[in-house]
Image (cartoon, rainbow, N blue to C red):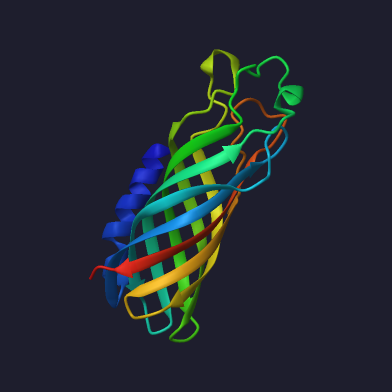
Amino acid sequence: MMRKFLMAVAVTFTVLPALAQTVHVGIKTDLTFSSISGNGMSCSLQTGYQAGGFAELSLNRKWSLQPELLFSQKTIKRADDFGVYYVNTASSSARQMLKLSYISLPLLVSYKINNFFTVSAGPQYSYLVYDDENLLKGGGDAFKKNDVALVAGLQLNLSPSFRVYTRYNHGLVNVNNIDNRYKWSSRQIQVGVGMHLF
């Protein structure tokens, strides 16, 4: 999976620009509200952050492709009944608030409604690079390394180079690495700003 991720990054940032009429590169950052829903996890949204870079590849006046490379710090919450579902494996000293750090690659298709509003949607692949969770006895990994989500958002273009946006990410795969009895799905709401560098 990691090899496929690196190949996707290489294709995105080398092949796609050749298809575009105009290419812009920029930076972005946002406030994130994340949760992982499923048995033993709390569905309440917790605050985190995300930052990285993007390329905007204009295909014509209305349509563009927007690949991004992001670092995402998610905070999620363990439910009080976690030990009920994982009686034999749950750690008695498990923290309730957990930090998960991902490298994410969204690949969005954007449509410019007018000079002020743009809508976008597409898939996102994320790879878990660090976590501080201690949910399991013996220090096992409770979360899978790979996550795939569907992203949709609305962008307000305040100037040709500056925008604010909001997005919703809905996880499509089971990120529960403990066993196959219960499915855990990620979700995230983002509110942020972006700026063209050139």
